[in-house]
Image 1 (spheres, rainbow, N blue to C red):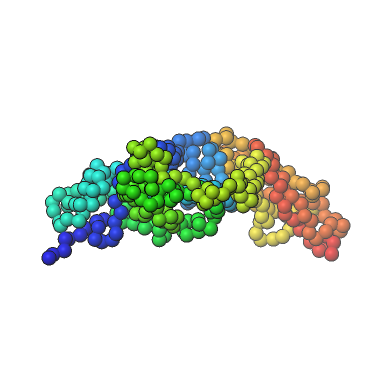
Image 2: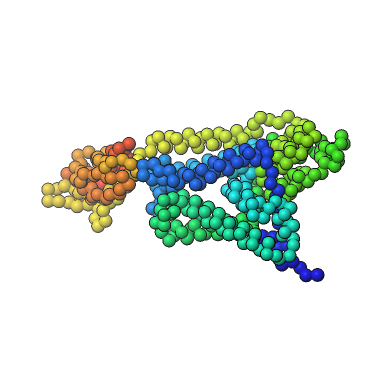
Amino acid sequence: MSTPIQLPGMSGTRDWVYPQSIDGRFMRLRRWTFLALHIVLFVVPWLTVKGHSLFQVDLPHRRVFLAGTIFTPSDTIFLVLLMLFLAFSLFFFTAVFGRVWCGYACPQTVFLESWIRPLELWIEGDRSQRRRRDQQGLSWDKVWRKLVKWAAFAAVSLFLGMAFGSIFAGAKPLWTGQAGPGAYAFVLIVASFWYIDFMWFREQFCIYVCPYARFQSAMTDDETLLVSYDEDRGEPRDPKGGPEGRCIACQKCVVVCPQGIDIRDGFQLECIQCARCIDACTSVMDHFDQPTLVRYSSIAADEGRAGRRMHPRRWVYAGLMSTLVIAAVILLVTRVPFEASVNRAPGSLYQLDAQGWVRNTYLLQITNNDAAAATDLYEISLDGLDGAELLTDEVRLAPEQTLTVPLVIRIQGDDALARTIPFRVRIDGPGGQLLLPTTFKTPRSVGGA
C-alpha cells in the first residue's frame, strides 16, 4: 500500500493541530484586544506629531520619536525604566491572571486568530474538511488550495513585515519605496519569520521556543486565575449528561484548542489561556441549562479555600511598578529639550598671553531635541569661576540641529590661582537649564603648586 504524498503544513509531517472555529464571550473580548494591537501596529506609524511619527525608533541616528519628543542615548534611563516596568508588569499580571498575555495580546496569537485561521477557513474549509483532505493522497483539489493558502500567507507575512518595519524606518518612506536597502532587508527578515511561523511552527513556538512558557509557572500561586476544568461537577463523564457527571465527553473543548491539549487533564504548560475551551463548553452546557465546566478559576477556589485578595508578592510588584512610573514622570517633567557636552580643545591645556591672562579653550556641542520649535537662542555663562571672561559666538539652533562652538575662557594670571579650578558651564535654553562640570587649568609659573 503506497503512502500518500505529503506537503508542508499537513498531517504526516508532524502532529498537526486543526482547531475548530468557535465564537463566544471570550472570543469577542479577544477581538477588542486584537484590535488594540492592530491599531498600534498599522495606525500609529502613520500618525505624525511635530512632523515626525507618533512613535518611531530611528536606529541609524540613534534616537526615538515619541509624541513629538526626541529621546537620544543620553536618555537611556527612560529605556531602563520602561524595561523594568514591562518586566514587573509581566510578573504582576501573570501572578493575577496567568498567561493572559499569551491568550489576548501576544502578536503570534493575534495574527493567527485574526489572519491565518480565517484564511484557512475560507480557502480549505472547516476543521473536518482540512483534516480529511490532508490525510488523503495528492490531488489537484489539495494542490491548488495549498498553493493559494501559501501565497496568502506570504502576502500576510510581507504585510506584517512592512508594518513592523514602519516602526523603524517610518511608514511613509517605507511604503513609498524611499527607505534604504537595510530597511527592506529588515522587512524580508521579519516577513520570513512570520511565514515560517504561519506555515509550520505555530503552537510549537509557544511550547518549545518562547521562554515565557518556561518560567510563567514560577510566577503563579494558588490565587492566580487559570483556565481550569470543574472536575467535581464533570466527572465521571456521562455522554447523556446525567446526574453522575455533567461532562458529556463531546470533545468540543479539545477540538477548539489551538495547542492541541485537553483542558480536562489539568493545568498544562502548553495552555496559553485563550479561553476558547470556555466558550466551547459554555455553548454545549447552555443546551442543558447548566453552567460551563471549563472556566476561569484558581487552585484555591477549586479546593474550596478562601483566597487572599492580594498576595504579598503582588503588592511588591504593584509597589515597584508605581515607583517606576513616579520616577519616569519626575524625570520627564525635569527633562530639558536639548542636550550638551563640553570638552577641552585638543592641543594644549592652557595658553598664557602677553597681558598675563591665562586662557583655556573648550568645544561645546549642543543638540536641539525639540522637533517643532523655531530657531532658539541658547545663552552660555560660567558658574563657579569668579573673575573669568567668556568669549564665544551667539548660539542659535534650529529644530534637531547639532552645533559645536568654541569657548575661550580667560582669567587674569595670579600666583594665588590653583593649578586646577573646577567650574561649570551653564546653558540656558528653551525649556530648562544644563550645568556641565569641567576644569580650568593654569601654568605652574602663575598658578599655585
